[in-house]
Length: 413
Image 1 (cartoon, rainbow, N blue to C red):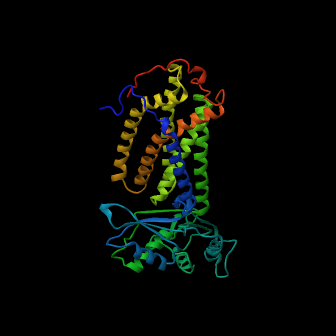
Image 2 (cartoon, rainbow, N blue to C red):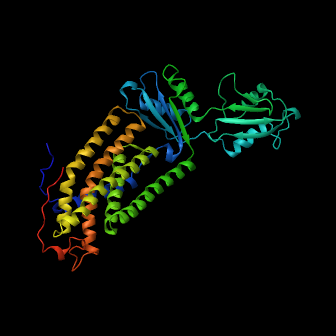
Image 3 (cartoon, helix red, strand yellow):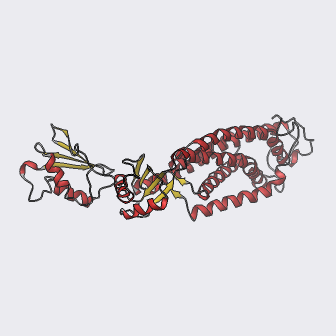
């Protein structure tokens, strides 16, 4: 069964004002929610520590949040992971990161007897020449002049407030006997989160380890956020250049407007649905931009072909004919893509589910914008800036060609 009868031309441009209003309202609403309340930025952009925990027994978000706050962490986000197979799985995000500041590193240098900052109780045989702290603040490397005493190092570390060593007999460890290099494992913020919840909720509810631990500093998060915005802007610029070279200069703004509409509307809907915005979301939006421009190019290509076929037709009728010929195929293609993505959305978990949701929204909006945003804006631009004789349309289907009757073609679906 065909979606649209062959040979029938639909008046899509006759509804351009209505859909222009809908598109403008959609974009304005998206801009409003982007500004306030704003996106729920993930750890990728905001910085902080994020752990995913599968609790052993039934636990609600309020209990978890209270236990995290009582453990010394501020403003925790507790999100339940939607998975029927793991109903007690939660995502816990805090603003603190596992970094050791400059002042704390100086204190460690004095305690561990680094040569340029030793304390009075550091014997000559136990002086160290180098101290390094990993970016994540979970490893400390110290290089000593002579063979180190691991028990002595452990005892010295226990005097440092705010830096807790991981439990276990293999900590600290001698990494390189030739260089007398010692590695000390320090508890990360994720470990401290688990310890705090275990003390408040009990070891019978809190597991020994988290399913996943991620962290990123606020400075790196800001850099990632800026890079993500730049990548989307650069993609739009190069798409505009491509459309200008591939078709005509007057086609490019319509394509870019429709892509910006798709990106903003997708982001706005994700914010309304309280979805986390992270690097996975940015990848999904860039994928939506690529899919949408492909859909727009296909319709543009049919419009260009009909310029040569419908020589006596107006630009508006050429657009109606081109959309009528392509819409059935476009809807079938988009529906197939959406059905495939629904499988990932229904049975996927975590970032995969959010990625699929963003693509589903973007594919639907991309099909809509190709018909009711890109082409109507291109028609308006052609009429306003490229028209002849009072703006009747400056394309190959201008008023000078209206005297010739329109040639009817059969629509191929």
